[in-house]
Length: 388
Ligand code: CMC
Image 1: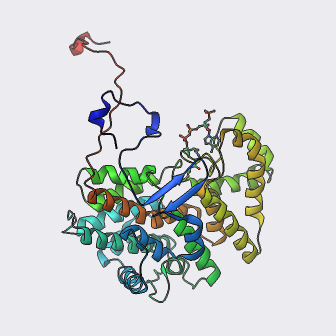
Image 2: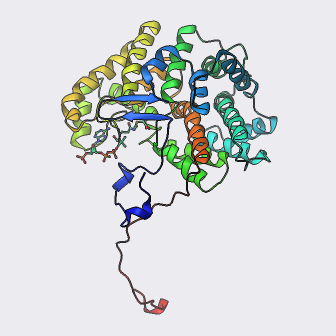
Image 3: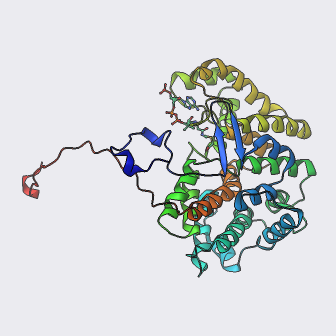
């Protein structure tokens, strides 16, 4: 790979589009053909055959686990699910109207502060910290949701898998197998996605040799934005807006937004110039869940919007992305809008940790891009009385 020292003149790329700064084996996005691979395995195969736990192992250890490795990994995840009392107390103090992503960012920061060994760069210790982070993000989210609704917290259930346990802690009742299965698949699809903005944030922090918790806090803050992970929450709000303010008239909504040059949430991607393969899988899952819940209203609205948007946005190679159908799936699972991005984080924490691990392992350099200076030079300094 070319080193910057060999390049000479800096390369200018608005939004860092199409820039490589490192190498990875974790995932590959073939944006032209709408294909995605984790460790070389097509995403469709993982969504069909794997589980969140197994795919998380695949990312953190860069190989599929044997049966005993998977059992050991799953056991560790379960053992690490609950949070220390001091964190629960902290969560009780948080204002009930706080955004769950802000809560996640705050509590993960607290977790890092409690770890006296936070700065360790030993590979096995980073893996252990990654497992701990993966295990507690659902708990932090579910506890806060129960607390803000004045409900008793529900402790993790070791008999349930990662996906089922989160739904159980959130709702207080055991979810059905089909709900667990569909939710599990959404987590697999959210686990990893190359050098997206939040992973990049994590890597920038990690590149300074800071600690993994700080890297994850950086990533959570970045994921929150509506152009990134916040889009799943916005996509569901959009469907409600169509229903309430446009009387369900998808075409009127679309015309209105396009004429105002506003974005359709859950559409478009920096890398995919074809249909996002995750959206294709999620669309099928949304239809399955709609049949199960006997309510096709939202998914039908989405399909209509996709069809009507096709001729307009398709010209610019803008198609539904992962957040589009994830939104209606989470809604049908009875999850409030403002938790959707936290769910994205609950899954993506694996990708963040895997990238930090990999970057440290390959001795990744300090990340330090440049901005092209466009101001004037040699401007004389004016005393304050001389300024206007
Ligand atoms: N609806 C309407 N127009 C769009 C959209 C959209 N969702 N996305 C891009 N465009 C248009 C944009 O207006 C611009 O048009 P023009 O050239 O006429 O000015 C053109 O497409 C290029 O847009 P861009 O902002 O330069 O493209 P980008 O690569 O920087 O943006 C994006 C990628 C994801 C930020 C953008 O597509 C977007 O804002 N989508 C909506 C938010 C969303 O769904 N985000 C989730 C992304 S996938 C999950 C994740 O990784 O977080």
